[in-house]
Image 1 (cartoon, rainbow, N blue to C red):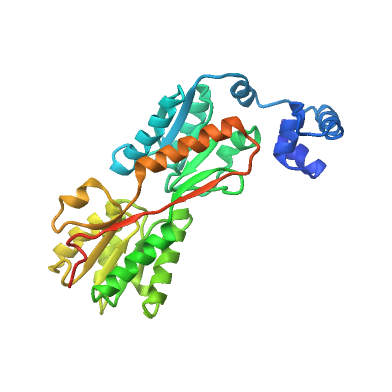
Image 2: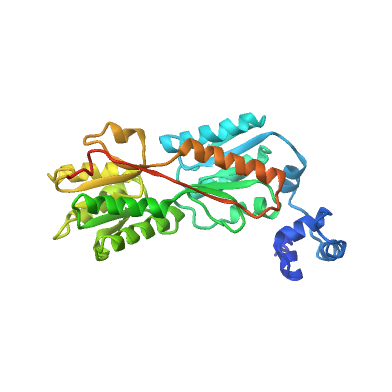
Length: 338
């Protein structure tokens, strides 16, 4: 069996220091003491450590290109965020290369590899719905190559990110339903491992508590963010003996599917079932009835993500910033019962 390649993590574990300390010591970074530099470099020689050639290539080259990975290129949400990233990139003399994971973990891993092979200077990423392990970002984190997450994020202790205030937004949606006379408020959530799923679910629970409504487990459904799975989740809710009088979805795509199912059940929106979505897609204004939705400052999110990227270039060892942006609940006909 071939001997396993010694990694930065191995050296860091043996010395009981952080990976970034080892990385900087190997490059004689001025912030690292000479004693630590000597210890790290001695151990690296003793263990026959060799640097990752891809990472070292990235460290040496300035290509003025940023890789951007999004779950899809169709929705207004992601296209608007990309526009914000591109706006700031252009101001700084940079270009962006865009790749879609198509909500696939495998495609996301492939996109990371392909973009790094093109020698982008770093990545701005929104995770796919399938992504629950994050080792494919190790090469960027370990070598302090700029990496920023937005919307669906991970490794917040290591990587800067930009997110919406998901918990507060979901809390406001639940209160809005209550104020419009709804008492059996259901929630269609996304994959449990996603950061947005956890935070919006937490906001839903807070909203119920604010309104003195009891939590009912049967009013929470889960889906994989596809329209087909969202339809299945909606049918499950509508077949309850006492079906919900309001449904809140993790995004607009989920609620568009719910809207179709509600109509097929012969129910009237919002009289029988009120609806609210999340992300504020363009179609919210053209469906019938028009969809109440939480809207994000998507262009500004993109600008903030790019700003964090350039901050990372200037100071790769600074503590990672976590930006939380306010949303707006745009009330339309799908939820107005009074």
